[in-house]
Length: 424
View 1 (tube, rainbow, N blue to C red):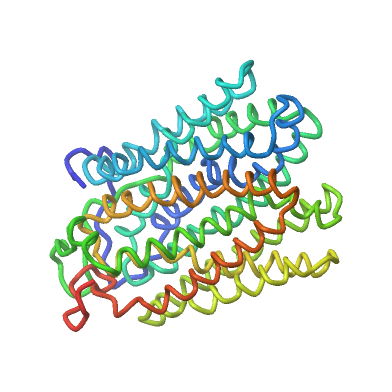
View 2: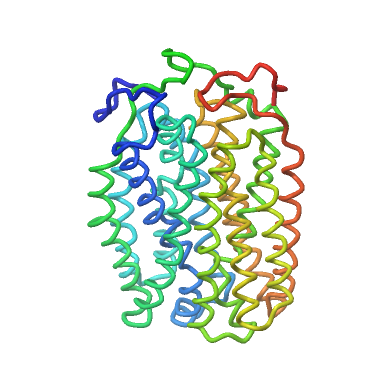
């Protein structure tokens, strides 16, 4: 990150003091808001509500509607490496503010589409403009050393809290105004509420200090070193499978639960349990990562996701379905919430944004874009979600097994090499 290019920075904070201050809590709040109102929080979290109305109005099948998320994800995938490089070069604030403003306009314009290609184009633009988690993860990595796991866990609340908010608000808006006006409301919220808050609270830290030294940490793997080791690919594979599975439940969740016999409103209530599980698991995961110096703390969460998916396949009663979806959220929130933390501990902070940016193309192009489309095709060809559910169960299961392959962290929480660790 280039310090001279950042227009708004904060003075240094002594690392031995509490890392949770008014300034850092404001930065954390801004990051959470950014996640809530981003495409992942608003568009993807509530997309299952739009499948039926879009399909009915435009006469599309499920795979065609799911292709909208595919276009969005592919755009994020293509643009993420550049965004990672831009964050390291100019700073997170310089990227987030203009992209958020443009994203608000793009969301609002969805209300006036008149042709199929226009809707696909707007979802493509949303993906290109989405800041993603890269700037938020990078800026929190600079503010938090010893409480970085907790900070990343609280960042995950943006998705956990934003999911049900988008689900309920989106459902109310669609029923009252239709799906087009709902996207207009999303855009207005992004531009008139989120952007001013980000402008006020989203601040860079000029220098990152370690607890044992007043020197700026310069240690960290280069992107090429990270990509050459097996650890990077284990982390990536775990993330891909976890995101594919939980996104599949999110995108197709309302329709899947309606296939189980629930009314639309009841399906929305049950699906909200997924985000409730994430709200519970994200802070717990963060505290566990800070307390225990091992990646294995994520394994119990991963196993809960497997159990929840098994229950979802077998359950038929609303109570059991609610419990199943809650366990999926509890497990997936803990499993997929580890990536940012793992990358800082295995590869350091020096080139974090570029390394994390290289993860995003795989995540969005394969796990979200292709995965969502494939699940839609499976539904169209089989006439139900039975086969899709089995695939999601397998994905959760393999993701859990991959955690066993991760070794000792290579870097300390303060950014210096852990001499006793095996190179990734």
